[in-house]
Amino acid sequence: MEELWMDYSPAAAYRGHAAYIQDYLAAPHEPPPLPPPPHTALTLEFTYLGHAGSNPSAFSFPDTNNRGGELRQRRMIKQRASAARSRARKHAYTKELELELEQLRRDNRMLIKRQQDLHVYLLYILFC
Image 1 (cartoon, helix red, strand yellow):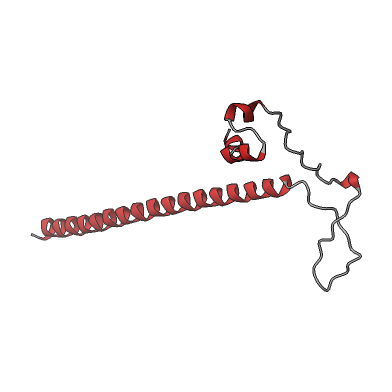
Image 2 (cartoon, rainbow, N blue to C red):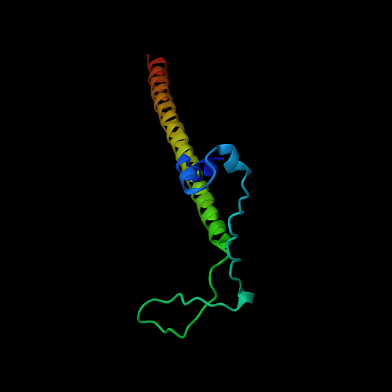
């Protein structure tokens, strides 16, 4: 609808065109021209994709089907997201192991202290 308003102007009445929107909407409009069909390998149209200084006789097929590029881009995005999730899992697992290690060290220190206390108590009982 906006494209209709963009083409319509009340000043068009002075140039012999429809002055009212109803007249403008009733007038026949041509559909926009269709874009040309994309080039494929079967059209036998080649595009030189080289750069300055390279062999100009080396031709290649045009990359008209950008779907491969889009798929590659999506795959790269998915792989990056997957790698980020993997790094986050690894970081969480490492953090969990560090916390467990610290708890085990505390438990070990407590048990060593308890064993020393029991040893002292046993010596006291035996020799007193």
